Structure formats: C-alpha cells, structure tokens
Amino acid sequence: MNSIEIAERFGFLAYRKKSCPHLSLRIKGIDLHIDSKPIEGFNLITHAHSDHYGQRNLNNQRAFASVETAKILKAITGKDFEGKTFRIGDSFRLGELKVETYPTKHIHGATAFYIRDADLLITGDVKQWRELPKCRVLITEATYGHPSFVFEDEIEKLLSVAEKKVCLGAYPVGKAQRIAEILGKEGYEFTAEDNIKRICSALGIEVGDSGSKIVSPRNLKEGYILTAQRSYKAPRIVISDHIDYRGIIAMVEHCKAEHVIFYHGKASESLKKELAEMGVSCSTLKDLDLILP
Ligand SMILES: [Zn+2]
Ligand SMILES: [Zn+2]
Image (cartoon, rainbow, N blue to C red):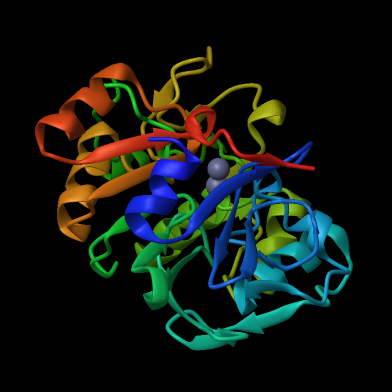
C-alpha cells in the first residue's frame, strides 16, 4: 500500500522527507517525524539507540522523549536533552492531537506512541507487546522479520556462566543494562566497563567491582556474546532486546491491526505473506512513495 492508498483508507498521510531516515506522518495537518532528524513539526523519539536519532534531537525543543531516554542520552553524550520529556504511561498534546505512551521494554525508556485521532500506534523497537493498546494501523519494526529468527532468551545459560566470573559481551546501550538487572536481581556479583557503568548509574542500576564483567562486544576477547544475531565468532548466549519472528506476528494479532507499516528492520516476503493470510495488509518504507523535500 503506498502513501495515497494509506491516506484514502486510514485518513492520515505517511510520507518520507528527503535525506531523512524512517518516516513522517501528517495527521490533522500536524507533522510528526518518527526517529528522524529535527525538521519542522514535531519529532518523536522512541528510544536512545543511535539509529533512532535521539542524539540528533538534543537541541530540538519540539522533540519528545521519555525521561529515561533523556537520561541515557545524557549519559552517552554529556549533554542535556532540551526537548520535552514524559513518563511512560503519561499522555501529552501535540496541538490538537493527544498522544498516549506505552512501554515496549526494548531498552530502558523505550516508548510506543498511540495517537487516537488516527487510531495509530508507533512502537519503535519492541521486546514486550502485551501492554500495547489495540490500533487500526501499527507502525513497527521487523529486526527479526525472517522466519529463521525464532528464539527464546537463554537466561539459565547466562546465570550458569556468570557464576564462573567470565566476560559478557553486550551492546553498551540497553543490552548491558538488561544483563546488569538480571544478574543483580539473581544476586550475582558483577562489574562492567566504565561507559556501561555510567549508563547503569544514570538509570539507578547498581554495578559492583568484581565478578563477571560486562563489556562492549568489540572489547570481548574471551567469554560470551549476548545476542540473537549469528554474525559473531565468540560463543553465544541468546538474549535479545527484540521480539522474534513469531513475536512480530503475535504483536500484530494482539493489536488487532488492519495495516502494518514496517519502518525499521527488514520485513521478509514470508512475513508479509503470513500477515496477508491473516487479512492484514502491510507497507515498508519503500512503499511510502510520497517524498517531500
Ligand atoms: Zn533499538
Ligand atoms: Zn532499532
């Protein structure tokens, strides 16, 4: 479905801005840019990962991000986020539009935005979909959008190696804090690299000085890499910040969406076909053929 077809059927415009990532929406004449560069209108930042453009919006007073996203951005850059912040679960207004916020548990602060005027939910990256509201149109991710990606987190395996005081390679923003919380809750001693410690401390997660060490994947010499991706050489423990292929389908079912726009990650032909069989149409960024200067 292209931009015009979406507009005809659902009453809002989904378009792209030239040389900007992801997508923009025009609802009741208000422009919303999702995980994009600062542009005229409002920018919604789903979470603090760099490929979702929060760092580019630090000075943008018309950008919106959760309190925790702002804290992580500050821990990474040393700079304050000058946009508007909200607590996840709060609502706020963008002119006429009321925006509700929901957690996706992808990383701390990760937010889904629901716009009732268009019955539209923008999830960003997702780890848990159970608290998301129903919607007619779902704008979401497909990081693991291929049927070969079916997995479950291997928490037991993580805990059994953590006992042996090993190095654990985890992406410093998000994944590392997930691991720190799991180890902390289970009573394991652990420490972390300084950049990871800084983000943990911004979020109130305690990190000790001994035990297993959480490091960036690129600093991992010996130990385990914690990811669902298969491209690493080190021994792997599957722990993901994303839903898998089955999770994407379960989320679409849960939300009762009629149409899905995959705006991040790669939706495979199998995924599109499986959704079509469920009576759900879908678009990817390539289908959004209205490109404004
Ligand atoms: Zn992310
Ligand atoms: Zn992402």
